Length: 257
Figure 1: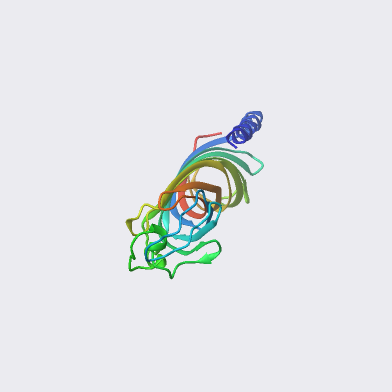
Figure 2 (figure 1 turned 90 degrees about the vertical axis):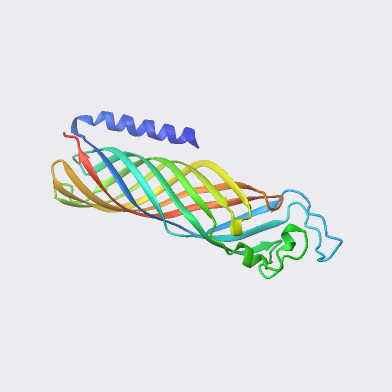
């Protein structure tokens, strides 16, 4: 995936260079909120979990048994920096570096082999003495986070390109390193970090305060695929999804024609 991103970036640079006589370079920064979408985590047990022989008695869980749950997140934040070129025909191309972070709100709907076990004593996971709290109570905790470091090549089209107020739409491709850390009730459930192909769609508006300063507001929908987690609480691998909505404001400084 990284190779595809580098090839795409090279193609953008070639196009930019071919039209550089008409380009206006700019730099910018932005900040705002990150709203991760719920992650429907899915995975399988990677080895057998033996049955218990003393109370509480639980059956064995064979390797390959599916498991999963839903994770929701709090509103987080995002930071980004951009460098780009604007063309006379309304198109812009841009390189973007971005960072986002949001904390876990709660986990829910934990299922093993298709059966919801939220109402079962948490000892079904620890295979030890009765805990006195259900699985649902233990995982209903906001401890943990999702973090992303990303680089994108973006393309935009500015409407009303000659005016002071310019609505725009765009899209981008790149790579994102995503890290998940799940620690409900301070229990180390698992962590994972992957670098994947990522894409995004954008819409926003620019307001020119003068020839050397612009304000802008923007919405991004960003999808960075799945991150594989090797769980510590049980012998299983889990895939967590990174999809988020970003709302940001920022400024650009044109560097001249």
